[in-house]
Length: 285
Image 1 (cartoon, rainbow, N blue to C red):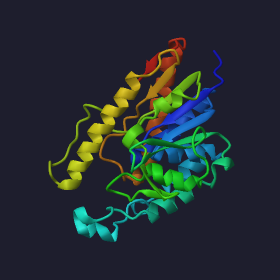
Image 2 (image 1 turned 30 degrees about the vertical axis):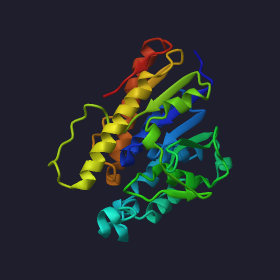
Image 3 (image 1 turned 180 degrees about the horizontal axis):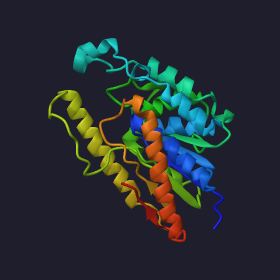
Image 4 (image 1 turned 45 degrees about the vertical axis):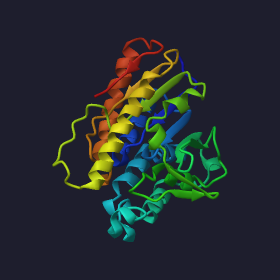
């Protein structure tokens, strides 16, 4: 069967989201070029890189040049603890998004992109780009989608505050379902239910408690989105083995890219070998 409306869903997951680049490469090698990207957090940034027209090589080059300080610099308010606005400065992440994504407006993209964010005041999922609001700068929307609470301050746009889309849609399959796809390929690099968390309990105090709560919430949320999937539309679900507690390990970008390629290649081969039965979910990991 020839698919004409392929939607590629890219999850949140911090630095581990570099695996999305390898997965998109594997899709292209099998003639499954995405006709629409839907992304959350790092998935939105990677989606924007591809939707801007960047080649695989150019995307890898940009990602592997990053260092931890490009995304994680302590904010002055971090010293205030619970009274601080955020742990990290927002400007380094904004500057990094600018270097990674050449397009500046949604209208500049060569492939449609939908970015998820959350309205802090109402807790509603808000979409920017195709199928949502496109009246804001692309880079502002990408920062908003990546502004994970506690770590980064929310993005202020039009008098409203927006935070990480992963708070409501870490794997935005429901958004993809509204786009009338005939095939969805989703890459999930976020926390997974039952995933073992190593390390000394309480090592980072309140921050560790926050991270644990987020991990549980996002893992359950992702599994719920998968369980709700409309089985009349085929879904290839790819889960690269990228481990946990790696949100800011940008130095491992190449390793994540390569694992994304391997996981996607296996999942797509398994799905293709089944004859492309509609509604099949191929899982990795």
